[in-house]
Image (cartoon, rainbow, N blue to C red; front, side, top):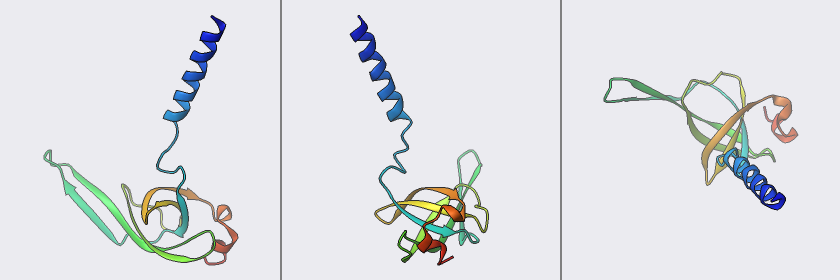
Length: 113
């Protein structure tokens, strides 16, 4: 009986752990940037008449080694100008992002900002 409870507890812990994993961030490459003004705003009107806006950003970002690369991504809200972001990239597509402090960036990136 104790073994069965132990297996059940282990199963629940593993299941909860897998549910809480953010698959958009796991195992992705990171690039860093400072947010500037959105380059475009895409609007979609739903059948209900509601308008959905996506803010598109096209800017230069830096790898952890300080190499520049051009990235394009969108957000559901206008991002704070001047904020520092860490983008999660897979195959040149942004899967997610986090706002970070400049001190959280690699030194090679800090020197480029």
